[in-house]
Length: 200
Image (cartoon, rainbow, N blue to C red):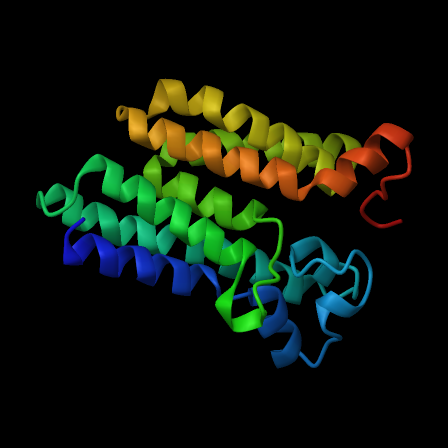
């Protein structure tokens, strides 16, 4: 591993560690999202405050922070400073930053928006397809976790068609797996029929 790769991996993790649910909530004088609802510092929990603008900014912030490090890594890749595997490492490090943020005692969110940002950096078509799946199921069932899980399950399949490098496909599969694991309690609630709908 060269110094450029190491620095980009560290940068990805540090940027990924920025929790916009907490940052935006504090800026908007809203309750800490870790103290109510699901306790998850993410868009859905911020939405529970009734402040839709704060939730939108949280979604955009978490998505952008996933996109930026991978996009930067691609700039080096195109100039042959990084390998395809190096970009995969940066993507995974960025996602891990969201899950285990160094700034917030390693207690982060579930990673839906951040994963979407990473996918968009890998491939615009891949990211948009996954986003459309997410939105369609969210509109149909109004269950945030269900739409996120279906989108996550679809991402490795779509990555197989849209991404050229095996390491990028494996990175997407790993990120999807980690996202699904983070939804363990939601899966249990879905099975028992106790998962909340948006607006309930």
